Each structure stands twice: as structure tokens, then as C-alpha cells.
Amino acid sequence: MTFRTTFIALTAAIAGTSAVAETELSFYLGAQTSPHSRVVGSNAGGDFDELIGWEGRSADAPPYYGVRATWWKNDTLGFGIELNHAKVYAPDDEAAAAGFDNVEFTDGLNILTVNTMRRWPDRWGNFTPYVGAGIGLAIPHVDVDDGTNETFEYQVTGPAVMGVAGAKYDITDQWAVFGEYKFTYSQNEAELEGGGTLESDIITNALNVGVSFNF
Image (cartoon, rainbow, N blue to C red; front, side, top):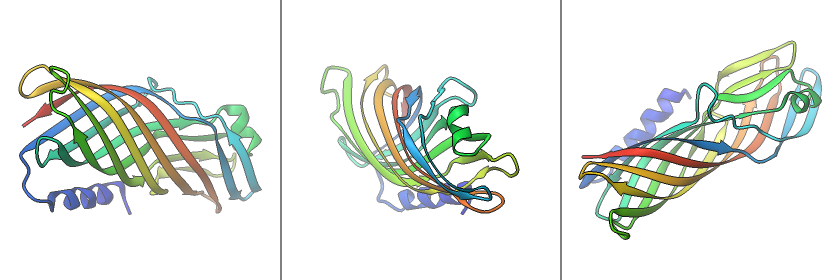
């Protein structure tokens, strides 16, 4: 399954819902980190099992970002889709300990989800707090080099979930700015060139700022 096919399928699922009163498009940047997780699997060199202290490097190209579309059925309840472009790098010494020259998901650790959102319009003046949760797929660009074989491609590596909480501030009837905390969890099993797999459950934590447009 390709990234494009997955996106179209999830979009079609949302489009199949009943008519809604408002559409909101949100675009954000942020600072993202990821706690340690184990990388396990096997390749031509044998089995590996190493604890990796992932680096986020949110500002490095391509930067961390996200795009979210929400179809609000009423003033408080909405459904939507979201692409979160996170990324994680294994430090060189830890990649080497696992038997690799390079291990990273930096183009990126893409999380595509179908979301349910809840908001409280103008609860604090022009501020509208909101929360949301979603389920979907991890579609990372797998960049793994063992010195002999290099895996360098997008793959659908497993299921993913996300949670978000934030608040937006209305500038006009259509434009707003927002800040939020975002959490993702993904189970990743990547196929490696030359045979074998690399598996890791990856968590990301991010503080995002962005702009939204309503129509």
C-alpha cells in the first residue's frame, strides 16, 4: 500500500460522513522529542536488540510539521484526517552498537490518522480549548544502512494513535492561531534490503503552534 493510496482511502472514509456545518484547515510547526525505545530484528549480520535514545532535531530539513482537516458536525463535535510529519534519528554510536551505519526515520516518521475532535467554543473569551484523538497508520521513510545494504524508501510499518490538547485564539471569523500538545505512538516493522526486519515502538511528544482557516 502506497502513501497516496492510504491517504485517498482515509479521505474517502471521512467524505462518506453526513454533511457538516464547518470545515477547518490547520497547519502547524513545533518542537518534537521522542523517548528511548528498543530496536530489535534481524538482518544479514544476525539478530540485534538495542536501546535507542532517539533525537528529534525538529528544525533540521525537512522540519517537523503537520496538516489537519476537521469537519465540524456541530459547535462541539468534529471528525477529520491529519498528517503529522515527525522524525527520529538514532545517535551514531547507538546505531553502530546495533550493527548499522545509520538508522533514522527522517523524511519522516509520518503518522496519518482519522480523528475525533471535541471543542468548547469561546470558553475563555476568544479562546476555544479543544481535545482530540485519532487512529491510523505509520508511513515512515525508512533510512537504514548496515554497510552492505541500504533501505531507503517509504513503507507502511504498522498502526498508530495520537492524542492532542490545545486552544485556539480567533483573530477573525475565519482565521485563528493555536497552540497545542500532541502525542503519537506507532508500532513500526520495517522490511530491510538484503532480508530481515527492524522493529520499534516509537512515541513522540510535541509542542505545536499554528494557524487555522475556517469556511
